[in-house]
Length: 281
Image (cartoon, rainbow, N blue to C red):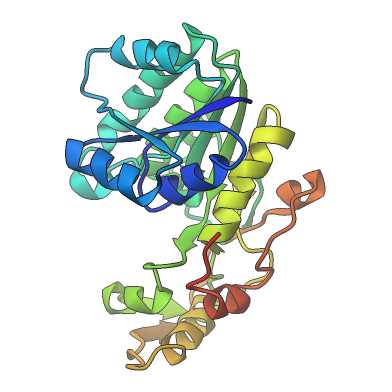
């Protein structure tokens, strides 16, 4: 893959684009001119460009043709918190159609483990797809939106990889800072987390080594949410107080399939990920 386009140069997409630019020509999108300027200043090796999904439907196709993109990485959030989640599947449909009408050879989708049902089980990749979700009330509406978007990629006819990321932590995303927003933490619910470094490295690995796969990306060995947030709280100076501690089980995401393909995590435990929270590639 000589030319890679990253749609969504945010907290994950920007350092991803910078790392990929060591060996590829990389373009990365921002939604404002100010964002493009800041991206170009921060990462001179990345070619920032302006793009919004509310542009004309054919605009992205023209952009990808001009860039000569071989691989497109969709790294944009669904927008649930901003009330824009309903457009997410539509945006992915637009992206896939644009790729299909150009010379793009590979699509990588950064998805989420939020696709899984509300069930206290070990979650493997085959336990969530849109056909299952439409007939199972344990899947949330948000999960169905994510899965509908994934389905566009899977059925694109283009080589693909869907990476379902667990909770992202890393520089400027210390888990201790999440504690004040939590209502409770459980001694029986696994802390499904992944460090920014492992998230980026899994994407880079997928560009070269993964074909037509859906994969979980989560730190292999974890502890309960109660233990994880207790450890995170003790790792910073102000030691935030934990919310109510409960004993309610929850889903456990596993990344065995990714590891079996040959990926090596930098942080094998969530405690290691907290210890290395400020590390960057």
